[in-house]
Image 1: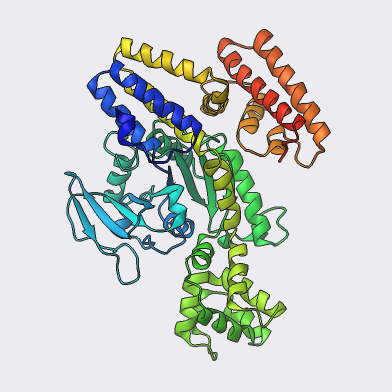
Image 2: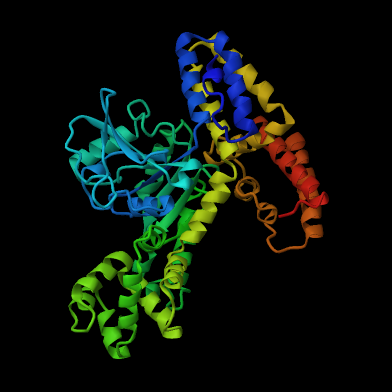
Length: 502
């Protein structure tokens, strides 16, 4: 049996276990080719959640990947490796495997800095698989993808290949996407995001499986953003909210971040020597500091007691914004130790919110995301033969009829609505997306900060409304979604009544 070969490998939860059992039960009823596809589905079900990091070239994707992993291992300068898909996954021994297009593998060492070599010196490379002992990779396999939108012909060809689900096996198993943008969402970002996620487990992007990061927000000119009051971070939050509106319903949220600061703080790149150099800079007179922070050239070339090479290193790690934030912290507390200064830089990066959203959208619902992606793959595998398709459809319907499978129904409803396959009035669309896009009960109800009694009454009222709508005002497609939303509200009401509000 297919399941037997994978026994002992951890599943994300009961929904993945149910889908794995479904694959095992269907195996004798399908063709050998379909059964082989089921085996790949089973392998993915037993693997950690596959999260692809995508975005335009020079968006800071690889820097963000390093922050996510907690180790500076992904090359950040444009080179051979940044034009390849690289999969970062957990392993008991750190190693790099270069996978060639003919299926052969070659093991390479990390470079002297512990990073993937900038040049591989190999022809016919398909992708790179990096195995690291970092604990975060027990929960996520992080897939760093080539920068999209490059004018380089080779990168364009690799991007087109990346978006081809047949030829891009290295990324075809991705079940969730972190999409990185800078400054403004371009017209082709939305189509690229749609095409990219369509190539990952055959699922469209939506609030179920995609979030976006607005990166390099330290480059925002706050005076150009209405309502920012000259504050960089406030300007970044305003821009992120606008971009969230533009990218809806492709992503659950857009969060501002400075990946360079996050990488330096999270990977150990910021050292005690860097803290001492900043302390020396903080002792300079205010006018000198102000002039030095006006540009990178002035910062590194100005005559002062801190060596130019040391300042160049600080600029490379923190940029002017990070240096300025560190100096302000030292003004307030001159004896601030290196560890506390690192925390200041981490807080200034906005990365805590990104990681928290990853946990809320991806990690907390990994069981449902992986199970839903697996069901989509199973359905696609059986699409060729009518009899096979019907058997698979019937088996899936039996699975979805179980009370414990409601989360899968809800994820399916979100996918249908976010993709436009089932249309509602704008206010109802927003409500469907909200009720299924976060584990926080008050946020799901759109009543953050309100008392439990009000939440309870509202959940029951909306449950009744959606039940009536399903029966009397909806099209058949809308009714299917409405019944799921009704049950979601009813379960929230039960949770609140039982005292399970979070």
